[in-house]
Amino acid sequence: MMSPPFRSIPSPNIWHWPEVYESENRAQDVDGRIPAELQRIAPWDGRTIVDVGCGTGFHLPLFASRAHRVVGVEPHGPLVDAARTRVAGLANVEVVSGSAEALPLDDDSVDIVHARTAYFFGPGCGRGVSEAMRVLRPGGTLVVVDLDVGASPYGDWMRADLPNYDCAAVESFFAAQGFDLTRVDTRWEFADRATLDAVLGIEFTARTAARAARSIPGLSIDVRYRVHSRPKPIGLELI
Image (spheres, rainbow, N blue to C red):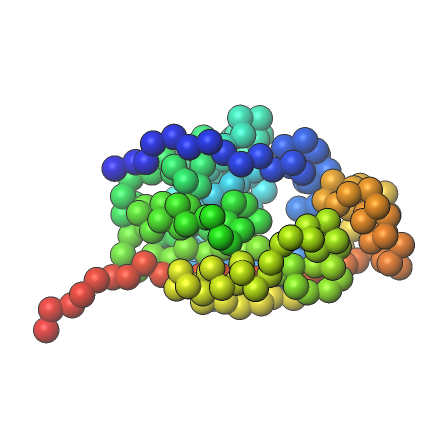
C-alpha cells in the first residue's frame, strides 16, 4: 500500500531560481559519465524507473528514451507543472506530486528508483530508503547520486558553507544500509562566465561563491560524485 503524506524538504536553489538551475543542469557532466555509470549499475532499458525529486524533469527524457515507463516524483507544485510541460509529448512519462518519504506508488511496482542530489543526504534519510525498497520489485535497485563533498574543488566550497557536514558519517550511513559506492569524476562546462557565476551564486553563500569564482580560470569545473546503489533482495530460494 502507498505511504501517508509527508512534509517535503525545501530545495533552495531550484525552488527559488529554476531558470538558473536549468543552466546548471545543462552544464553538469557534459561527458555523460553519470548516465554511463547508472546504465552499468541498473540499466533502465524496457523497465520502469522512478526519478525522486525530479525537479523540472530535466533527466526524464533521457530515461524515457530507453525505459518502458518513467515516473517523476516531485513535492514542489511549480516544479511539478514545469516537469509536466517538459514531458508533455512523451507517452511513457508521467509526473506526480509526492516526496521521498511517501512515494505515491504501489508496492513492488518499479524496477529502479533514482535520486540525484535530492533528499538522500545520509543520516536521517532512512524513511526514504525504506520507501524506495517498498516500491521496488524484488531484484530492483535504488540508486542515489550525490556530490562528493570530500573532493576538491567543489567539495571544498560546500564544506566552507556547511562546516557541520560530516562526509564520513554520510558515507557510513549508506554503507550500514547495505549500499555499494562508486565515485565518478565529471566535468561541468558553462557557455559563458555570466552563467557560471550565476550558478555559483545559487549554490553557495556570496562569500564562498566569490572565492570559487576567483579560483576558476575558464568555463569548466571538475566535480566528483558519489553513486550509491542498493538492490532489493529477490528473496530466499527453496532448494
